[in-house]
Amino acid sequence: MFFPGSRYAPMQPYTLTRADGTRVAVVRIPLPGAAGTLGFYRRNGGERLDAIASHFLADATAFWRLCDANGAVVPDALATHDLVGVPLDAPVRG
Image 1 (cartoon, rainbow, N blue to C red):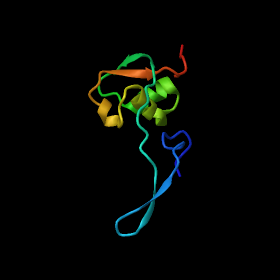
Image 2: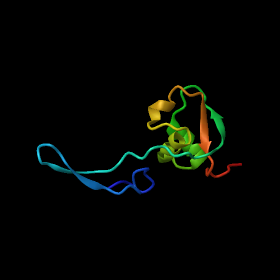
Image 3: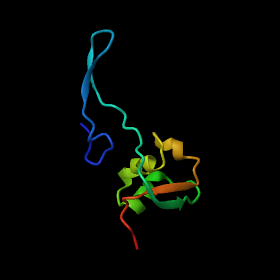
Image 4: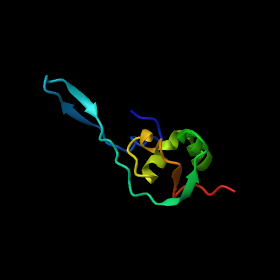
């Protein structure tokens, strides 16, 4: 249902019945965990999370891991942050 590496990939879908009787497949929204941070990165101007994720996590689609490390449910919640926490499990880059 979701691409590999997605924050939703490990979530188990279940069926919900709406008031009109229609059944739909849904998954719970994964809440940010208490992932530790390796350190903080100061954003350059309006630098996007996908660019930061590409640099530190070697995967631009892993921007959601930055959200988790910063306690943000959605990427827009980090839009005003000058410092972005890098997840503790990020590969160390030389």
